[in-house]
Image 1 (tube, rainbow over the protein chains, first blue to last red):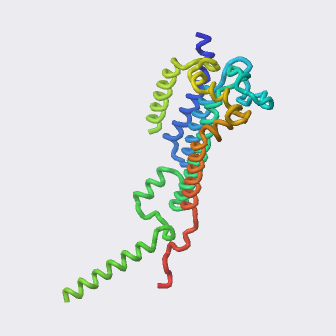
Image 2: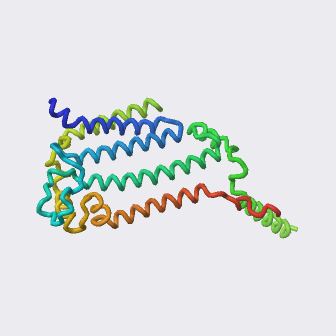
Length: 162
Length: 97
């Protein structure tokens, strides 16, 4: 039982971290806090994968030591190096994480500019009120065009009626 | 709503912990992740790419197209951020009308 706990407690740590992020994504009203929760979630997944690459007993990072000698394929003791594949895949995951973080923060910034708040419930309230959007951010041109079009049509129909 | 979130987080966490019962032990050298293809990369990194850092070899040589796609992801995200945050100078159209 003790061995089982010692062999698996790392997974439980990451699950705990992941659920903290998951809860933050669902329960928090503040959009920035939601983004922070998403980052905690992703970090937990990355830690989980990195931990699967570990090996017991004097294992170092996957950088081959006798590289200068050249002829590598015979001398490499696989049990002496950590598994490189999770490291590589998590590099990709970190890149995706940064990309999603950037887009999410940009969208949050736009939401703040438009509604002057990043609290979810206040944004929903303002959307229901319908009068929230400040003038400068509404696409005025399309409104103008539609008004012009409407007046044109009204004008023509009036002419026809006359 | 908060209590619903808490309950669902706990339920998912318990399900995941149940899933770890069959996971290999931490640091097991014979775990499935460390036995199939990763020895191949470790053994042939010098021979194929002359690079001592195996992570670099896998990233840039074996999975070069994956890394190319990664740059596409970064590029797309950058374009999206630029499109979202650029100044809207012409939003009002011709104001002199």
